Image 1 (cartoon, helix red, strand yellow):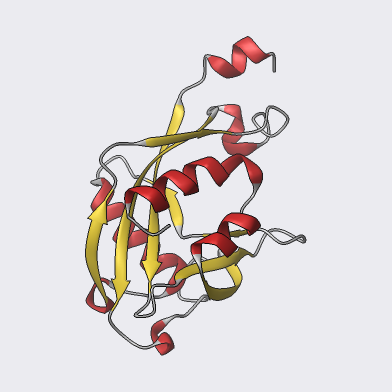
Image 2 (cartoon, one colour):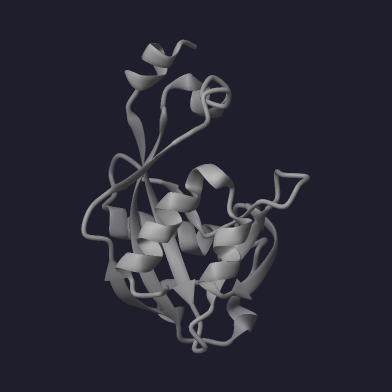
Length: 159
């Protein structure tokens, strides 16, 4: 795809969840579909018939086994945040229909113990997980998402 073709593509509507524990550490999952280290927070697309908040709770449950009864919703970004995929990835991801994602982020506090986390609950998105300081996660996130993660952490007062 040419740069002009990529630039003309829309962003995929998506949500993300910053799940924090009582110590203020952030949940990070190692992507199951990657052989190299690729840590991220729970995220996923918004279905046509759901609100971003409903999508965030659904994605959190599907990817981590953590249900709405285990968390307190503590915040939401003021607006959608975007990131562009590297040009070489655009044709491969999502059938080449999107240039990247626009994401609404939600801050949730885990009110249960770690035993509620079940990476095999529904969608096996992560092969491993860890509680991390935001600075550590920023070092481990794929470079094209780093600026957006910094914005999210800053907006939620986590860095």
